[in-house]
Image (tube, rainbow, N blue to C red; front, side, top):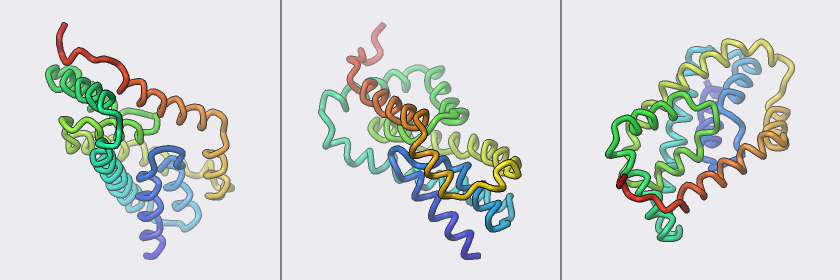
Length: 186
């Protein structure tokens, strides 16, 4: 039972990080292979833990938005207004949280900064998408039988592609808030 608690803590902690955390699927695969845990229970706990971590991350960014440049926050709010006014864009946002193969940290940071975006539907979409993807990864865990958690973390932290993607996502978040959005005018 303690391995399940450890998995929950590691997954929630990784999902609290704004960047450079190992992907949750790799943590799930490690725990499945290393401790021979029940894959169904582990996937369900993984989804709940990841969702909890992303919830806290978004709420932290909602609180620290006052520390960000006012113009940046205003631009992010204008994006929120555009999304709010157009149901297609709102659906697209939910689809992004459901299907996104990329790190979701920056998506939740942006959602946290934009107060008008309701976190509940995004978290539900995130959890639904992760339920599917985590199930696939844990089911295919036999490929990683010889990999340790340290190797996975080291690979994710030192891989040029992983570093580049994280840096680009952070720069994208910064750029998004620096665009002068027109607040819904055509």
